[in-house]
Length: 122
Image (cartoon, rainbow, N blue to C red; front, side, top):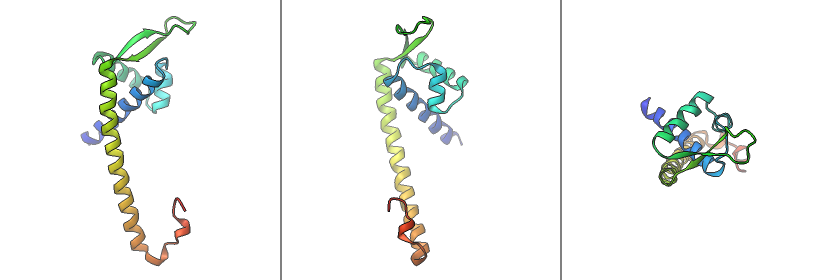
């Protein structure tokens, strides 16, 4: 269970770093919605990223409300984003390969009962 939880947490961290890299002006609420996590989780995650030195706060100059911040990736954050991206991609390729093998096994089990025109991608 802990392994699955750490994957979910790393996936959320990956998505947050990726979103902030492209849109540093996102609010915590917008970030939470985009990643699919609660506002509290987004706050906790951003605080952890700040504590680790992966992001820094900057003023969002275009906002009329000068209390808004931009979450800017630090060089350390950019390096961490690259490392997480690599691990994320490797994990997704493994999941894809496993799913593809399972689909082939199921097709073989069904044999002639499986109609190719019903398969995805046809």
